[in-house]
Each structure stands twice: as structure tokens, then as C-alpha cells.
Image (cartoon, rainbow, N blue to C red; front, side, top):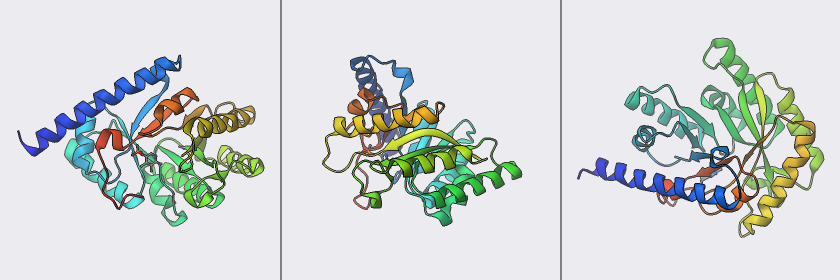
Length: 248
Ligand SMILES: *Cc1c(COP(=O)(O)O)cnc(C)c1O
């Protein structure tokens, strides 16, 4: 078997196992598995892997760094010629990269600051004028559950700050507030963390009833996230394998 065929077999096996795992998690939580999106996170893996996943039926992918994503999206296009694909940004965005992100990101899961929101809105408005994008960017406001905002997110202990950023996104012409996202603090109990996120989501829904999405859960904690209402699990390692040690 060639190396490429071996990778295809490995990814097909991992994808099937992951879909089974997500079905089990949904059933255990008494939820419909179709209400939880499985978003493959392909950061640090080559465009050829994304092309395999696309052939296996995946139609959306998450990336965490603008430059890596832009290059991979171009290469993926050359490999597949596919147009039926969406790309999501899940990593922190520097405001000088927001315009570039707005050129390719269907959704941003990781908005944490007013400055980046404004830059993303300007970039998306420009892209819509130029015809390179047809819809506003769907935005998740990232919540920090332990107040350590150096890892991204607005402090859940500062509800006024969360409200302000959500209102800014909801009022921006080229952005739509999709919902909230969080990554549990290191060492935290996932159930406790996702329960806190779900509570904050219920609070935000009072003013933003359309912001129904909850981006929560990764390879190690997707069952807990599904128990607490996740509508999108972002899975890297359990699908792609271990990333190189340089991973953030
Ligand atoms: C890398 C990454 C993931 C995937 O994490 P795994 O533990 O490998 O599944 C999910 N969300 C974000 C924001 C990431 O950066």
C-alpha cells in the first residue's frame, strides 16, 4: 500500500470512530446527533489530508493561524477543484490579520476583542463589496472561564464586557453573532467548565435569541460538551493524530 493510501485508510477509520463516539455522546445526552456538528481541525496537517477528508464527506474545516490557512486553502483548491467547502477560524486573530481572515473564514469561533471585531467587520464588508464573499462572517464570542484572557476570551466574570462585545458583533453590518465558544481552563473539570459556559449562553440568548450556537468540545472532552448543549465540536487530534510538538 502506498503512503497516501495508508493515510486515507487511517483517516477513514478515525472519522468513522469519531462519528460513532459523537453518536454515543448525543444518545447519552438524549440529543439528536444531527444537532451537533463535527468540525475537523486541520491545523499543522497538509492540504492533502484535507482533500482526503473532503473525499470522505467532510465539508467544513477549522484552522488556527491565518497564514497557514490561506496557503492551505489555495493548495486544497488546486488539489480538489472543490467549491462546496467552508473554512472556519478557531485561533486567536491579530488585528492586522483580520482582513485576511475575512477573505476566507465562513465563521470565526474565537473573537475576543473589540479591536479585532471592528477590523473583521471592515474586512468582511470590503470582501462583500468586491464580491469575494456573499455572506457576513458568523462570529462566536470566545469566553474565558478562568479569567486568564491571555489564552483568548472575554472574562466570564465580567458580564458587562461579554455583553458589550456581543452587542458590537450583533450591530456590525458584515458580522452575525452565532453564539459563544470556550476552551476549558487547563486542568479544569470539563463538566464544570461547560456548565458555566452554558449558563453564560442562556444569559446571552435573552438579548440575542438568534445566537443559538455553542462551539464547545475537543478531542478529550466532547462528551461533556455535548451534555452541556454544544452544537459544534472542534476535533483535531482524535481525527488527525498527534500534532508536531510546536503546536500551540
Ligand atoms: C487545536 C484546536 C482544537 C482541536 O483540539 P484537539 O484537542 O486536538 O481536538 C480545538 N479548538 C481550538 C480552538 C484549537 O486551537
